[in-house]
Image (cartoon, rainbow, N blue to C red):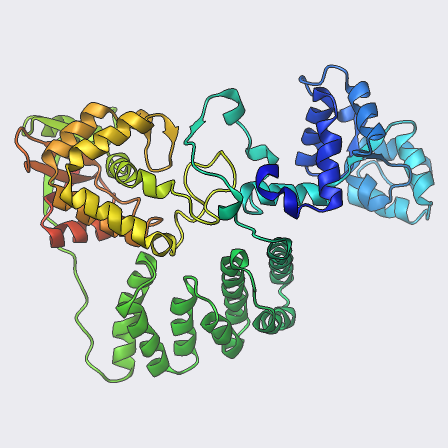
Length: 529
């Protein structure tokens, strides 16, 4: 993190790093433990960590270096969760005169009525016990944001890498490609994070007027730096959706129009329809149909458009009914998964049958585009512990790598696709990548699949995955059956009694039918024997 962002750190943030760095390992561990927990205050008598053999010494060191604060006059709100109901009773039983059945809330209310000063309250309750809090929580929040590139992750996300269990690909990390180019960009990102927190509080309170005010503010307070753009659009969508629920449709529609993130266009069309403007809603549907952002939007517009056409008195296309190649299979009851039972039955018809589900085709995608996935793109990699770039599942993943992907697709079309993917397997095996589940794949399975699956089929599948990587990494058929000669294969989607096809599975089966890729739905039922 320092290598990328030392020039953006404030004096307090750099001071925190320096102070922590010069602590002993036990004190460092204790600070990380405390700052990672919900607090901020902790009773020392409740702290017990096996990696810290001398807790008093570590505490004293952190207090000396200003990384811990000692409490001396906490108020009721801070002390309430730190002590149990029996402890509160022991401290104030004589003065509250409550029945033994009184709960903690009633007891705290009675103690509040005693009007004790904060210092006296803590002295009576805690006695000589020490209560501490880690200092620099705001600085730690900034450092975590710089390291992870988001507000969701924190120090608890560090688990296996330091133990050598996970190996990460050595992609480039340098200041030219970092997420935040300036302190202003960082502060703006944090600013919109605070607005997102405010939106959540207003939503929880059911405050429609407050949400409307926040929506008006967002129309004026738009981001100037690219890292905040998606956060801003996401916030617009969130606030607009709440405004819909409060019946404030015009403002909701305005917010959706300013967002470039799904489901803004879909929700805008629905909002216009609810507002009595089916023509406007249909116009939005035509825009989405011509240039969809993702699979979910495409599905939504295909459902909405016929209804809107009928509202306008115009002919609507007939409802689409899927007619997939389907086969019934009767099997004796067994204790294994229905997919494995079906695979064993199919082995009588094919040279080999593999239960691959999503792992194989996703793995082939990851190997085919490995160097593009881990290419140095601004804001893609924040630290050395990522299994994919930060924007892997975002709509602009493809756009930001347009030239790289075009070049790679041409290499795959014109070269020996099988040799290229096997070479990538040999070079990268074991490195963390969310596309390649190494433990479920083998080089032999990869080679056999590449022998049988035509390159044009794989390229068509990969193009569809690139359109919407988040959605199109799931829904693949369960089984792949292979025969001896190239081109002799079939995918099988296995459904046991009562199982229905999911939307993602239907999309892939439709795609396979359009592309002439052999696929069949296998409906398994169990015999009575």
